[in-house]
Image 1 (cartoon, rainbow, N blue to C red):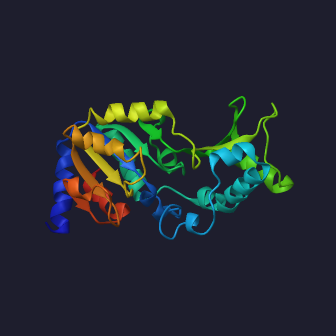
Image 2 (image 1 turned 90 degrees about the vertical axis):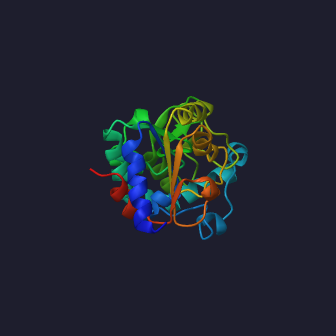
Image 3 (image 1 turned 135 degrees about the horizontal axis):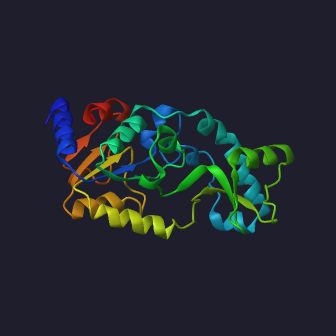
Length: 249
């Protein structure tokens, strides 16, 4: 099937569906200037990641992690939602989108206008830091400014260490977020995966569950994914270019 025909068919699936689950990964945000940290040329090929257990137990690891956050903060601060993020906001306005499940921590879905009750951020959110003792949240800008000035891990007023409100390597995902995402995946008639290689578990099993429960499966990604062989349509394309064609508004 040629590319144009695939886009027409994908548009028909969206038009005919009543309940849609959207799943997004790093590829939806690269056009906004956010690097794909887990890719073959990503930052984790250039530096050792800090694991959650080490962050908890080691002052050196906490300093290393905050150094990394300071180095990469400019990407997140300057990034703006792109056409793909905005198209998903328009999809929500149709009333068909039950949820938007994302692996991204860049807040771009929020900035684009996706409503909080539709958004499930599986890996957390890079906009705030959270106290590991009392759970109080502070803006990431404030925590980074403290670290920049003192080169010591920022702390909460209660004395507990602050940690960026993201899921680190070795840290479990929020079970309530997973439960909600998997529950909604069983209620949709169309699942759209955008910009994910679909290899990171348990997140990748969310669109898979929708497919196993009879939903039509549309994948948009530049490069192979682990689910290409079970997709009804695979669009090898930039989401910024094809989503506005599929989600008409």
